Image (cartoon, rainbow, N blue to C red; front, top):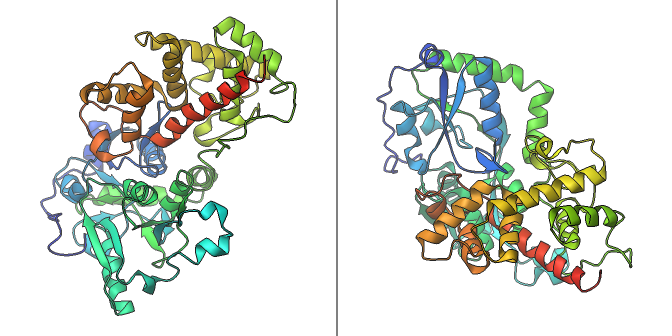
Length: 455
């Protein structure tokens, strides 16, 4: 982004759209990145740290928030200056070069860049000090290493400066803006590339999804993150700055920040040991699972396996996105099944079983009964929209859209990659696909083990 020959043109042909025009049109159009910090859809709910901030700002000025997901980050500045969007909300760092062509709001967060690297093979069997000795432990050890980063980014510039500081060459592999930072993180985890760089706040979130990564090595001082806008949007900037300064002092800002950057997004469950400590029963709620199974037509042990995966049988669980209870209902879905945050365990379990039965009915085109249940479990975890996207991709790529195993689940895994979630048949964007993929496999494995133990 910072070099004159970079792909983004840094056009200065701004349109004359400012706060009065935004209010008159009744909408604030924001250019979002499909990522865990900017904007995404979770269980049919629109979410994202920056999304939540700007939704509240839009409400404050009395307009609707219009979401425009940008598929190629190389075009961000051109798009905002040409009027396709009013604000850039893409985990955007304030830099000197960007400041020449757009304005930035009051910063809403500060963070630093970190190296994302893969823990060595067999790290699980080593002591922590042993595997950490095999990692890059200081910036000068990047000499001669291949590091993949978005070319039009502050990461690229940081690596160029770092070469000067260490007096040696780093093999900087610049990638286009249609490959997101979180996709590069996944590529490190899978061994496709060795290193990338990302902000610490993004790294902390992604470390929860890929437990073979290390993101401890800091490569920069703290940098300011803000919303970008046209140079001509003087009134919008003044209003947004004023709002952000006040909002950052409120408890709700701390709550939103904590939800995205401090609260765990997922629970790592053991894949191998599903036997409970009770011996002759799965949980203290077995009778409720059996009652729910009788009414819903679902094996009570499968319902119990789902509840264990969702909350480890905790009726008071509250997780990322506001999901509550043993069966982890979202606030906009629970009441449909008569489940509220204070509902007792029998009602939670019955509601969960009814939701699973409704999902099963939705996938009626899937003829095999257990394959249909896998579709139901996947949509229970991720929302139907993402599973429909995977189904459409399966059909497009010559796979069977009505078979989960090795067909739709394969396309679900691909929904974490921009090449796939930017496909025109995809309507719900990116998903942390490995989470749902593993969810179905782990629930199924646990259920099959319990079938052999509990009548």
